[in-house]
Amino acid sequence: MPRLSTFAHWPPLAIQEEIWALGGIGRDRLAVMARAAGPHVSLMARDGDTPAGTAFAAVHGDVAMIHAIEISPAAADAAS
Image 1 (cartoon, rainbow, N blue to C red):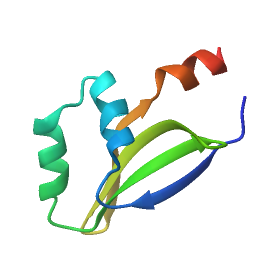
Image 2 (image 1 turned 180 degrees about the horizontal axis):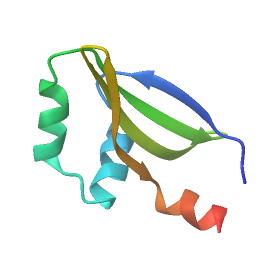
Image 3 (image 1 turned 120 degrees about the vertical axis):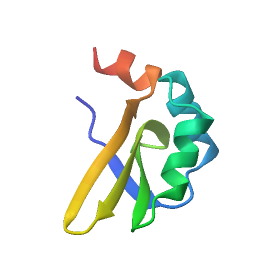
Image 4 (image 1 turned 90 degrees about the horizontal axis):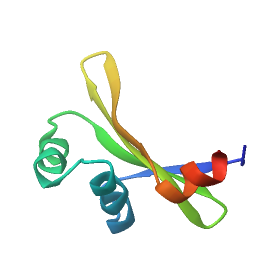
């Protein structure tokens, strides 16, 4: 299993939107992420310089949730 690095930022990068789209997460769901009222962030995982996956995290009150976790097809193939 490759060792991954990750970083958090907002708004999501185009490559993250591509990975989400491959997983069936489209513009409507991205719009919901953008409207999150509390603190929110996109997370991107990399294998070296190659995007490997993405997720969305948001905080409401004292609860944090991670949504829209997707792994890029290339990273999934490399892991199998």
